[in-house]
Image (cartoon, rainbow, N blue to C red; front, side):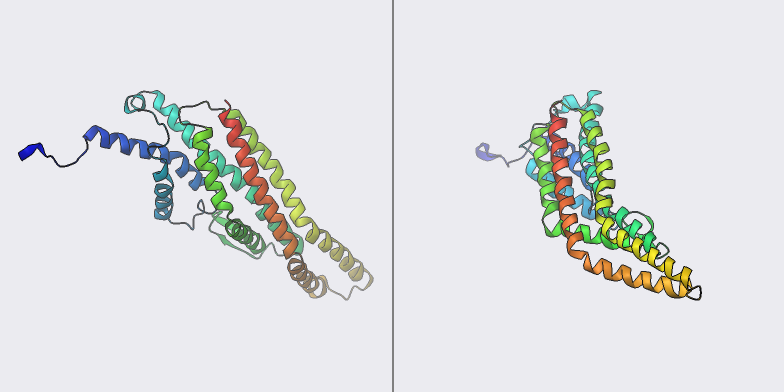
Length: 268
């Protein structure tokens, strides 16, 4: 062109490098959104997950060191890609495992109250689950979003690029230990959540058993079942503040364990 003026542009190699860098950085975030609570549910459309991954990855481009194109063209690329996916999946599975305490508590309460047959399709689990368990799961998810727990989880994932850089040290055993610990805590938290209602229902069932034994004309289905249903609804209503507080504590413990797992994984 005249005067030596050229249109601004970029070399093809630069474009390929930026695209490769973007997709490499999106692996960890995409894996977390795929396995984590909320976005990992089947009720979330795939385009929503893709857009969320893109939006969260954009601030990282140019700010996080990534392997060069030559490094990604070698066999060591599979190790780097696997490490990124493992970190995201590990963090998401850890949160999902601890959040499963709400479903276990609701399932045990439903079975104790005789509501185990009242089940419907759960889109997040992909199977039939009791309605009480689904209500507990929805309540936990609402508290998680209402207290900005999802933003805290996203911040931990974004900060993990500093604590566990893509080409840094990686300790998979710390991730495995954290997930196993989360499985144990899941049952402990589920027991704490369901114990008030289950204990009260156990006493009510004992009382019904004594009544039906002393007065055989009081049929279990005509007398015991309505009493148990009414007591369950009243108990669930009365224990809502305590259940919400337990869910808030569960979210705090889950995010703390997730942060500790990221720190341990980065120590190599």
